[in-house]
Image 1 (cartoon, rainbow, N blue to C red):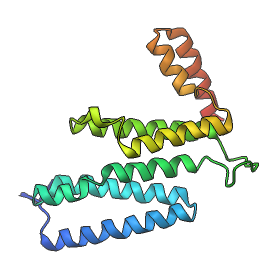
Image 2 (image 1 turned 120 degrees about the vertical axis):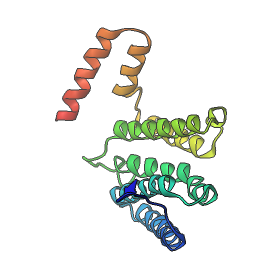
Image 3 (image 1 turned 30 degrees about the horizontal axis):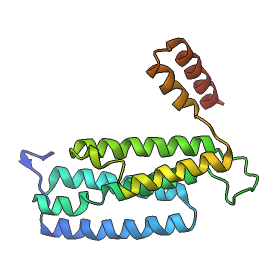
Image 4 (image 1 turned 180 degrees about the horizontal axis):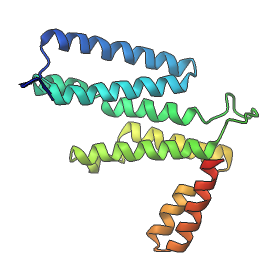
Length: 183
């Protein structure tokens, strides 16, 4: 993070502009969610997460960094929610060829894994299961399973086969997953 030969650090004006951008992207992300523009909500969440990474790297002080980092789980929650909803039918019971509840579940599982990594990184793993956002995502995932009759996803079956050291089954399931993703 050098410009020329100097270390780059954010100054007060940069910080004010970044604070404004965080707020603007938060409001826009909430609007995208309300408008069911889930891909746009995901893109805005990704932008915010990238901006958080940039701030952490170039921050003038830890308090300012924390003022943003404390919202990282919430941004990950929005990102996970939007990426899962993108695979759900517009209205429950509606026929929607682009709907794929299993992929929605996979998106939630991926988001929960990112959340777990965040808790581990901050040495707070024991708080993970009780975190309100984690509980909500788990409830969302289970409601999709119940409402759409989705059992274990292919990825979950692969993970279970590996855990059980059944590598032949895991390889077959991986091939099945690869074929599905190609089609």
